Length: 231
Length: 397
Image (tube, rainbow over all chains, first blue to last red; front, side, top):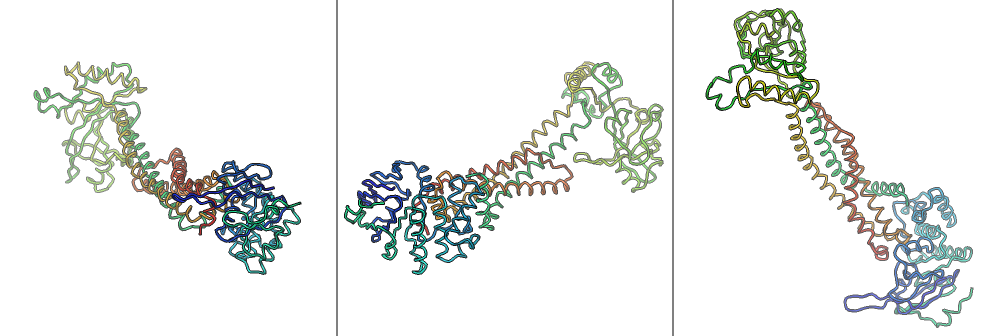
């Protein structure tokens, strides 16, 4: 469960200070499928980084599975990212020199998983996303949709509770986008993984069971619907 | 994350830019190679100088250095042999001395048929042959009866065979030495080694020599003892006795070759250090090259660093990754440099005719030092990589 309490993020630019996130309070239950939408510059990426423990709030508290991670140091945050969060990016962000299998193994290297177990789990994850025949291919030899599926396999390989996807279909055509979104839906429904997707495409947002609109660093929906989620 | 994991990762990133890695390594290869060459040749030269200067073990030479007064009193003093028969007999009384090797040398003209030459003619005793390890390549050496009977026989150096006999075998031929006939019974081996040079020399039994030149004084006296401690004591006593007998202040002295060799060893060590330091500068430059390339690499791989951080790499793990990468680069360079240095030093030693010494300490030092260079010069780039902001890095194009 993700609980944000009065999260504020302020950037100081010279003499001016800009509130990118302004007193955001938000709860996302375990197993939810949430879309975050908003115009560019609205602060949705910052919110995403905050939830993904890549960024620390200027003020407010962030409870992840009951632990206040807003006071964690960088090493502790790295561990949280490694263990509890899987990232999927618009530009896939695969390492070009590593095969699909090695890319998927990467988070497990930082988790200290043994070599043989790493390989078995990476193969399993790639099988789950339907790429068992492409394991030894370099990212260059894969199509956009295949690359994104490798990225999804990499995101789920450490069995995180949360998957954060930043415009995951932004670089894909509409048919492939549907494939990828189905993949997320499957993960959400079958494995109970919390999926949070940042997007500006309403077709993508339709997969989510809840949509959060962000504008000017604030959440733009009636507070009743924020709280009124049942699972 | 294990060290092996890091090492494999480092090797694969170095392989991704083969040309760049090899060129960067070249700086380290040349640097380590140069240091190894200098040290190997320096140590080899030092070892050889020492054995050649010291000569046979546990000996000191006595020498006579007349004072200004003595020279004024007798301007021809240098032409006279400084050691007399009774000096030797007095020296024989010193307990610590195992043997005294006395000989006398005089420049002299020799003739064979129409050919003449100026040579140094030395009268020797049996101990002299043993002490100086004289070996004949043709004919035979002196026998005891040659010494005792004062027979008119002689050994000549290799150069005399070449110069006076035009390379023909001189054994059995009779030449004249200071107008006295001498039969040549053997030719000495050509001297080997850095400091020995072939000169025109003829050796005669001392008895024979005395008869020819009409003098029973000696020009060189070498003392031999069982240990170097005894040798020190014997040398001091000998010099004191001689100064007493000749009524001189301090003109008879001891020449200790081991001390001289130690001094020369000191000089070669300093030379090696100086040249080695200059070679070390190239290693330093190579290290800067490594740092430069690693900085480029960090900038190029900003996004990779961002991805790794997002996937859970700590700053420490990123730092370690880049440190191990630069260390791998310099370590491989260092090992190749050792081979380069070893090969070159071996070739040089073949041509220069002296041994090159590659001790395991030097090899170990080379390996460790190149690793240290990798760490020292990798620190800045690795630190830069670990300080990157993951969000910024992920956005980096």
